[in-house]
Image 1 (tube, helix red, strand yellow):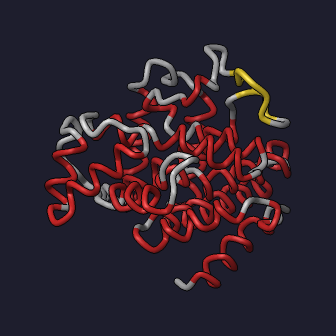
Image 2 (image 1 turned 90 degrees about the vertical axis):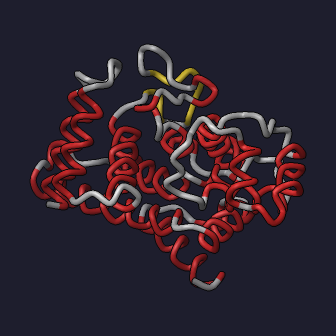
Image 3 (image 1 turned 45 degrees about the horizontal axis):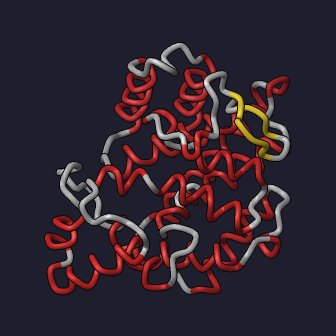
Length: 265
């Protein structure tokens, strides 16, 4: 995908929910461009957006009293689009740091989550592992950290990058909370009562919009990276929610998974 094609496609997605891509800092589009060049992340986001639009249509036709509002649609679509922009590194990262982080995230299905970053770099980038390790340190990060800890940093980076770029605040919250099922709550923005601990525009609580982003993200991950078929992916989603102490009785998540089953199945 050329630079112009990516900008056009991302701009069309934003326009579909009434948002002008020109209203954000172009730096965030550059980050998406880097992700597109080195990974499937942007393609994943586009696929999630397509499913979100299908769910919106499903509600409009079959559940009109519960149809997603304009704000909810914008929140979900932009939340999907920008959820993994943090996989380009922290907001202060320069070009070399962003490229390093993107290339690290491009390595999928790594089996040993507990291995230190330094060993991961030696294994997957042996030709210049020492230089990459030094660049990692320059980002203010410790190469001794486990890979799981490194991966989990991306939601906080998404929060910072998206907010700094001027993404609508409602969507910033939705993008940053897409790993809440794993207990990853960047900057503790979701309180114990499911309300946000600081203002995100019109969005005061972690509710249907954020939960739909989670469902779409998890479904896409197990379909593409986990190589599951639709039925198995839906069953996995349901089991994952049921086994989560915080969300096992969450009726909204259960309903959204059933909606996705109907729409995709």
